[in-house]
Structures are given as structure tokens and as C-alpha cells.
Image (tube, rainbow, N blue to C red):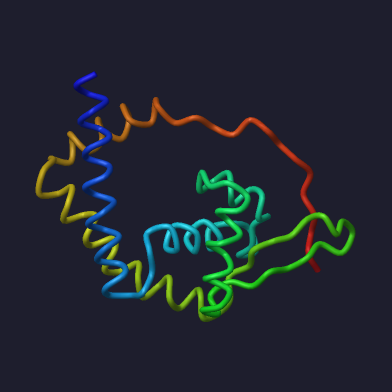
Length: 148
């Protein structure tokens, strides 16, 4: 229990601090940033909304609210799948890519500072390996659609 409580508290503190910095410096929440990052890393700079929801651990309504804000800001656009109207993609816009690049420099530096001040490189490798054991991978594979 001690390890679990420490993990939860450390996550909350780190997330709160990093999110406050992102919001102050770039006008993005940590969820906004992670969403832009996931889309940017996806093939073609777009990701099915349902997959994005799973990746970010959000409900369908939660991902809708998150994407609506990013769409209003001009960072993400909705793309439909012509062969299957039920499928919708979130695609990064040029403005979204620019915002992500701007935010990434300071955000990554903050993460490095947070961890670098507390852990050696060897400890970081061990920590990443140990925490990686807790990850639950999504086993549900659905069909994809290509946007032309």
C-alpha cells in the first residue's frame, strides 16, 4: 500500500505542477498537450477519435469535450471516413503542430528537471522498467479506414 500511495501522490503532484506550467506558458492543459502529442505521433498526423479516447483514458464524452476545445483553438480538425461514416478522425492542423512544437521545448525541459533533480540515469531506467509493468495495453483491435 505504501508504494501505491506514493505512486498516486507523486503522479498527482507532478501532473498538477506540469499542467500549471503548460497552461501558464502555452494555454494548454496537460490533457490538451498529450492529445496533440498522440495525434502528432500517429500515422499521417491523425487518429481515430475512439482510439484517441482509449489512449488518453477518457470517456467518449470526455474526448469530445477535449477535442471541441482544440478544434475551436484551431489545433485539431475533425475528418470523416468516406467509406464508413461512423468513423471520425482527429487530425492535427499546421497550427496544432506549431503549438505542440512550441510547448514541447519547455514541457520536456520541465520533465527532465523534475526527474533529473531526484533520480540518477540508472534510477530512471529502473523506474521506467518497473512502472512499465503496470501498463495495460489495449487488446481491442478495430478496423481502420484510410482518409484520402
